[in-house]
Image (tube, rainbow, N blue to C red; front, side, top):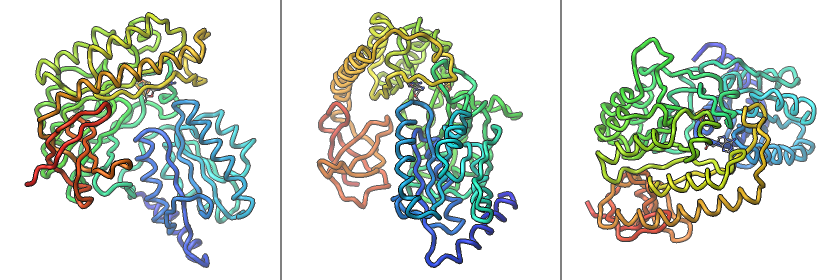
Length: 459
Ligand code: 5AD
Ligand code: SF4
């Protein structure tokens, strides 16, 4: 860690040590797993500064909103929650409120916070995450608002992370995106692709595995372009193989892959590496070539299906999941039907579907959209109904099989244990809670449209 971060951490600690009782902090992350991973780094810094973490903002001395910019409803939620903080701050004026994450990298947000949310004390963009101790020390010692909207750069290596789970860990391998899909705000808030050095990633995974972590989730906006910006000659499939070579009993997953860069080499690596989950999340977004071209996705439905077919030529029921956007500007019924066709062909084990959300600053925001919200709603319901049909049928293929499951919690309704199989399918079974955080072999006896249910096999 750079000296000056340590100095600022100490500075804050010296101030907070004088409080009557130890200070508390509440960190809220929104959005994707990369943002939650940033949230864990923020929690690490905050803990080092002497704050203890609490869940509720009401009594916190420091409240941090780590925000998401991908869709409008996420933005509305953040500003709604921020609005309700005003009341707490009036009652406890010493409360520090910080705003960070992807929304904080947008000029219009900085302006909005500056003008209309005067009670926000600190604002920093994702690349300036490690400036938090400096910003807090400035706020505490000078009493002024402290903002840092940094140019895009590589977040610092070696920050202490306070991880949300003791057995599942996210490991970002790269930051930013170069693709400029026309609907997406990410390239504007996270900047261009920057890959971490393979040695740093390997060291982190080794450390996690030594400390009992059983699932390593490699993260990046488009992991398939990993390494292109490094001097070293390394590709994502090679990185997967190197991580697979690390000793220990753990499962490796990753997201997301852009279909234009996901080819045979990637499928081969997934299949040949025994520690890599037999599953690929491959966001298709739409089944219509016209819409894919308007989205600047740089593949056609046919090209996308080549990767699917190749995987299935090696494992007949290879598991895929996807992201789909419903109601991209001027999507016709015909375009939408093509999305349903692709779903029927691939038979995804899971889909994450989103109604298109206009993000100002992106190219798609300039399109004059003639589809109504009602039409979009009807399409979404149709798509979800089809997916339920697909999963209830295709999950039957697991009946009779024994799946190795990383147990991760309990099902609220039934109290059964839940976990994920290698294929990233949710598995439920009766068992003791002490199994949470370890692997169990489960023989599948029935299939639902969102999970499969089975019986644990005694070892
Ligand atoms: N509207 C709706 N969904 C979006 N996504 C990204 N941008 C938008 C948007 N403007 C979805 C894509 C992406 C996922 C992370 O979020 O499907 O794969
Ligand atoms: Fe957005 Fe496309 Fe980059 Fe994904 S690949 S972050 S959808 S621009």
